[in-house]
Length: 449
Figure 1 (tube, helix red, strand yellow):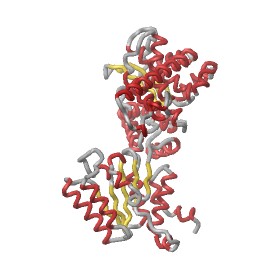
Figure 2 (figure 1 turned 45 degrees about the vertical axis):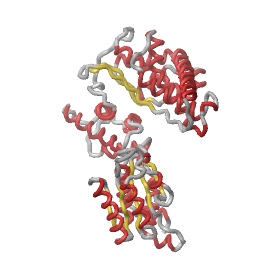
Figure 3 (figure 1 turned 60 degrees about the horizontal axis):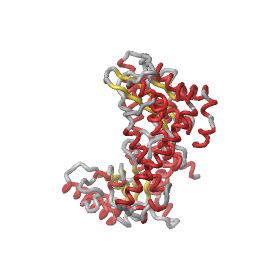
Figure 4 (figure 1 turned 90 degrees about the horizontal axis):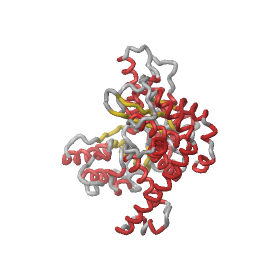
């Protein structure tokens, strides 16, 4: 049987939407566990273990369960549900039982939560028990499958080669994978014609599968509460704002206009978010999925949000672009209102973290700032690093102001649109960008892009 044929028989993995490269690895492992005699005839031994890691809600446990089901092996599951002393014994008993009933699988779910005693659990009894269990079943037909949210919470000795043969990172769904997952969660709902799963995927870029599911359900609840007959894009966007971005209130249906020539908080928020949007769109057209800026009557405050994705495949550009975008809100207010933006402390903190990383990782202002191996430090070296980071920020801020000044028409158009309506989505932003094409394609934009 051709590989493509027997892979089709593993229907268990149909439950996992998207993630094709990871699914192919899991299918291969499942085949080895299910048909180990085929591989043994070739002199290949079964892998000893697999660790799936990634942020909560991305589907690690679902993938693990699909692998277990496809393998046809009995499984012995271990989750932290007892006090430390009892749990150590449970771990040992789980491995012993799996060895007695081989071929089998030991499933260690949320393994990074097994111990809580020190920063990296170097001497934790729980992880000593796990390591001992793995070592004791060596040579047996016992496969160790584990999930973890944060590898930093696991001791290095547990992660070394020979204990987990494969380690797979499961990231939040992006692009077409996210669209497919959203479409699955929207199945069974009475949907309006304006629904755009691809736009929703862009708004929720980098969010877990669990977040996508929550938004789909919350949108249905909003539609029901308002007695609307269909779930529309407005319900989904509002669900995103409330459930994921913690922006309360009905922004989507707010029709109040705002004056941009005043010094009020609302005006400043609009110019601030317009600055973020314009610089992001100059560096990478189409990167902004959603921007909001409006006072919320219920919450009694003013909220602004720019959802953008500048992932370009070039890590150095990613960092620099992210730094420029972070500074753009402050720069826009200085240019348009002639005052300093007092609400940019988090933006500045983010920009300085990026600048510090640039001078450490690529030695942007000289190798003398790197230190021996990148880890040595002294008061003098730290002082020099702080100065270098400030220089990077000053230069970036100058660049951002030049970009905005050269594209003032684009900035005015975005701010004007936000003054008329509280929320702009990617298609609306693209339409504005295209209408300002002569400014967007300035030489300065190309220089930084």
